[in-house]
Image (tube, rainbow over all chains, first blue to last red):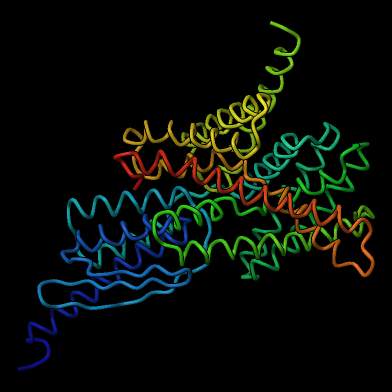
Length: 264
Length: 159
């Protein structure tokens, strides 16, 4: 019997395609900042819609593993996960697609094509909007922390330039920890010196507020939720990565304080 | 209205307005659509207003943050069926302005200061750093728990 006509081989090939397609759904959800339970549910819905059952899955910080089965046949496949970020619109689009797939069914090739299209075509806010919006968020954070009005505009400018720099460095593939140092230093120097030049009495807090764009708030909260929901491995990995980013950001803040002569 | 309560209302309005602005800005960073950005801002304002009221009532930052996150999470859990997938992320974005990032930075800077060859006021600095780090951990825990409880109790678990 030739391999092409062997029903077992055919089934394994089908299952492999299904596993790989479901893993791609999970990878996008993970990279968009989804909790482990969301990633698992997305993979389960995708596999179910493609006609297989999920026998088991392992969600790691840097990779996903999925075992799917149909009848007696099972197959296990693994996929790498890229840098974690937060992309709400892509996350929602992929969740909707997975739900629709589970209800209406589909073929693995269609899933791959749709995932590619969603990743390519889901709208993103342009950098000319994201950078000032992030600066505004930092300035608002500053007001929440008690900085005075003269420091508002310098923090806005520092946060915006910090976000612009972060996006450019990220696009070049720079290590996230190094980005944290560079952006914290740049934003801190601009925010702190600008606040001082504007006559602010809260230049030190303005310096710190300018760097708050770096605080990984979503991963920090997801870490706890993952642990609560029974996934301590990924939760712990997220918590450690949050701590590392904050340590590196603080090195940048420390450097900025040294430059401005306001080290405690 | 007494002068004290008038001042409180001004404080609450200030914190709510800048909470909404911060949540909106981070919502843009997180690529929320325009309609969801309105929700982010509203939840940011709600969370900061509640937290300010609670702090004015003598509550600790941790208890106030927990209550504010619980309220934001409850609003989203009650309306999540209507808004569909990803509703849980909106509640989280609304609570981002309460994340104590500045405390974290100060705690680590305090620890840096302790490693100087001859640290000045070492005991005070150590206590400051420990207190700041404890507040970071407890406040983050409070926000996470406040968001998770309504989500876990909801029939629509947020996918």
